[in-house]
View 1 (tube, rainbow, N blue to C red):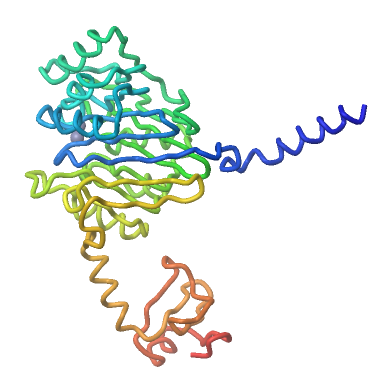
View 2: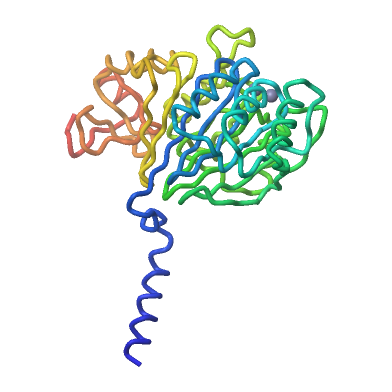
Length: 346
Ligand SMILES: [Zn+2]
Ligand SMILES: [Zn+2]
């Protein structure tokens, strides 16, 4: 009887711990996302506990590069190969990947394209005898200790391939990563309307930083700590667009860019994420933000928008970045209606 009680108690204790996902991770668990530099295109490799998922493969011309990347990572078997949508800069290099690696599961939207790049992808899948699956929003699957949730597309219109993009979120412990393909406002809106939890620590910015994606309402729900833009240097589209960079600045997201920093590798321990670019780690990736940083250095005091107190920059009760007002001197602080903080007595 006592044994039964003890078992019951330990079961209950287990349940109580469940909200803290990190505690469920095996001791030798690992999780990485490699945002591969494929120029003006997209490709990301997710690795978890020895399992792998390739999301897009860049352009046809990137086939060898992506194949070499898989070889470098000792991957000859992909657990999941995902084509977010049928545009060449996403599906093109997947045929290269499927030439060097077998795939357990191949996933693409229902809408294909009558192009050589797409047809090559389909024939590689056929050659492997793996049917291309079309997921539904809400579907989930496991990749090692991480969970992948499909958020979109919710509806597909064949005349707008970007909005057929498979949007998915990967949860690992308490951390999460959002992949958006080239989804534009319309698809973002549909996913928001469906009520999915899209909050994520790392956002792969939609459509290479085009201003047709990453709307304010979308970004406010994602609230990313880090934003990765997969984009080619001096591309003819003007990506990433200044309006998107400005929205990312407003949200306080730290921006990483493949055009400036090459391959970008994010590592999660289940609690927090650290990001290492392959080059130019300290580069200016969001220029105006750097200018603002330089200007802040000139300020003497920091005001709190909410409490209307102003502080010395070394005060231990500084407000968070979004609630700060930078003030040049005491007179400015007083004239703007701020009163001195009782802790640091500015
Ligand atoms: Zn596209
Ligand atoms: Zn694209």
